[in-house]
Image (cartoon, rainbow, N blue to C red):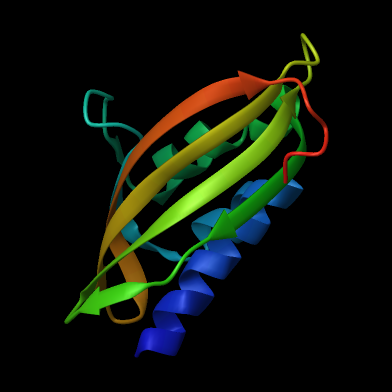
Length: 127
């Protein structure tokens, strides 16, 4: 099962990197809940999650997503992540780091909660 969770994280990350909302949401159950940050409004259902992520390619370029070890406890898993990107509008480089906590059922994510922080950086060597 650990490998299945790793594949979910990798698919999610590839979708983010490519700006491919359909690939990204393919890991979610139809009635899944996505919470971007603890104080965000929940996106409920795959259409709402897709709507949240559809603007990523409009706003982010040169996206690089990496995740750490996947920690598993029954139907739950968690991992840390780092996402580097350039803001299209300003050119500012962003380093976003955080963690995602997921609950699953039948091979799909039913709830994803993310906790992250982002910071600008100037060195293109950061990767």
